[in-house]
Every structure is written in structure tokens, then in C-alpha cells.
Amino acid sequence: MAEEDRTNYVYEFTYSSAPGLREIFQCKYVSPGEALNRFRKILALTESPFDFKIVVSDETMGEESSFQVKGGSIEEMFVKFKVFLETSTGYVFREVTQETEEKPLTQMGLESLSNYDKMQVVIYASFKHGKFSSLDVAEIYEDSFNEDLPKSTASTYLARMWNNGKGHLERYGNRSGYTYRLRTEMKQVQREVERAEELLAAIQMRVRD
Image (cartoon, rainbow, N blue to C red; front, side, top):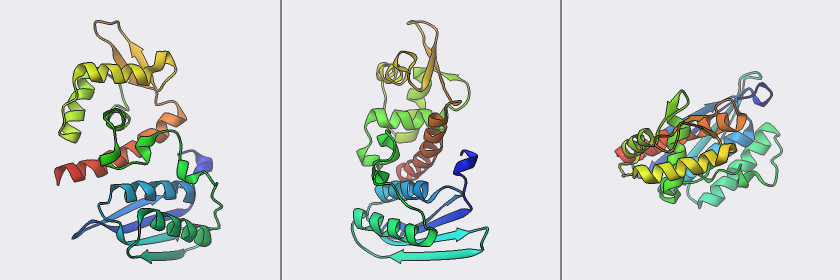
């Protein structure tokens, strides 16, 4: 997180991700806008969005605000939470808040993710250090989603992410055996890594269940 983006806010969401299953998610020091984006991801991963409680704490001022909502559609909950953040923090949201970034993987639930989206999640979350191959990606993909990803398909997707050197990957070797490295020095990649780690952890909990 860039220093200028750091805040003193701590956000805690208590919610029911499925009947009889209660969970707590917390994030610290991000802007209200980023907290709203993460809340949207949580909503997308719930089977039935009900019984949410949000607590926002300002560590500097020692102040705390809370908001609870039961029932309603995902969009209704999103709007209510947005209004709550505006009134409790004074933050002004841009009109495009709901159209966050360009990566659909940061907004969608498991059922909405394509194979390519899932592979992106795996790469951002699992390969922050060192080089990796299409076989490495396919193996972690299978472990994460209990689904097969053919090596040829992984190779095609990796080439798409590399995008002739203009994407988020660097490529090494030749056609007989390419390896890749995630360009973690890029701020955009760093943001995707953070979001993918959270999303993959939530998805893995559901896959194991």
C-alpha cells in the first residue's frame, strides 16, 4: 500500500456467508473506497447476503461507528454500506466506485470467475517470488479449485498475461519451455496481489467446505 493511501481506519465485517456459517473479515489502514471494494467482494462470495454488521474504527481519534443490516439484495447492501462510510468518515466516493479497476477477478464470486480469471488469481496470489512454468500454474490451479487446467490452456493464458512484454509478466526461455516472472515492482501488480490473496483465501475456504 502506498504511504499516501494509508489511513487510520480499521474495518471489521461480521457476516453470514451461508446459513449457519458466521465469519469475520477485517482490513486495516486502507481508504474507505478500498474498504468498499473489499466489501463488494465479500458480498459476491456469500450465498445469501444477510445479517451484516460493519464496524469502522479511527485509531487516531479513538472513535468507532457501527452499522448493521439484515436482509436485502447485494446491491441494496452495497449502497447502504457506501452511505454509512460516507457519513462515518466524510469520504467522498467517485461515481465510478462500482466499476473498480480493470480486473473482473477483483469483483466477482467463484461462480462468476472464468478459467482465465481463476488462473490470474492463482498467479497473483501464489507466484510473488521467482519464476514459474505453465505446469506450476496448472498444479496450483488444480489444488485451489479441484479442477483440471490443461498445460496447453495454462500456456495460452500465460501468453495472454505476458502480452508481448506489455502485460504483468516477464517471459524467459524459448518455445520448448517458457518460464515467467510476475512483475511485482509494478504498483498495479502489487494491488492485484493483495486482492488476489484475499479472494483466493475466501474461495479455498468454500472449496474445502
